[in-house]
Image (cartoon, rainbow, N blue to C red; front, top):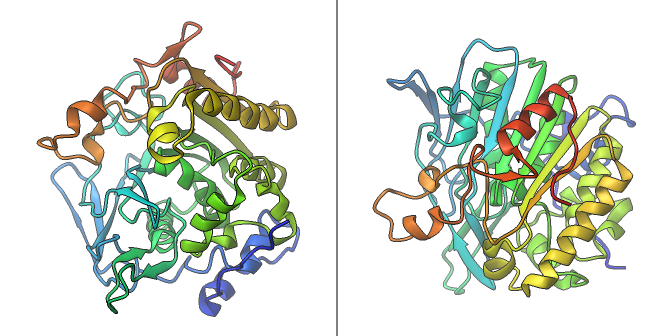
Length: 378
């Protein structure tokens, strides 16, 4: 069994978030420093745009920042709701073996399906909304600065954990005590919901927490611990792995962490979406044969569902499509990007993705209302 390499702790952040009760959810991760940046950073400025969206910007590259050092933005839409949507955008992965990731982001909230207040079928259209762009390539978990070519200059700034923590702090300032939280993330943001589930619970200890993991359900390469730990170590992200449960990763996947989180947090429910042959995850990033990816997906999600049949469900469809909450890639690609047409063909929407006669919008509603919510397509 490989020993965990724990991240260095930041004492001020750790003290600010230290649990009063050692039995509280994720106390062990707090001791390891996963929440070390909560309460540490404040935006340099904020403004309200023409749509009433409150934009916040962080400009110091030593704090929350994008991979290329550009400012980090986060946005909030107040609709007077008791409930809150927190959405983590996707945009790839960047580590030493493969770097395909968005490296900058701007202000605003893009008109993607799950964030559209004008989309009648969106079950969370009336909720307050916190938008967290993805721009550092580390699945919202990194805390590292890397000089890839050894010239003494930083080539990659992976401040994902700072970015996520700062964005949740901003959301909490606008909405201190939501009754329900719908925490969703697509692709890289889906993987990011694993860290965000912990930080959201540390931020809002009493809220009902519903997580929708959209096409980032934690798969690695089956049995390949080196692949998984290379990324974890490079991002300095091992504080996310409970030191007394490091064997959870022995199968080569992060998915068992979701099951561990459900054990830790009785007020958590998790939805997982994927296609059986997700081309972006299986071919571009894992470089795995499609039949292997399908097997890993079924085994990993099936194990979590078997252990938590009331609080974990999956929605699986045929084909090679990628996400389902976005509708289109406008949230992370410009309209003139040469990738727009290619990526658009892989992204589903909450009304267009369907299995067994059920759309994603309907499945989301059944989860939120806790009314007949079951796994689809498995």
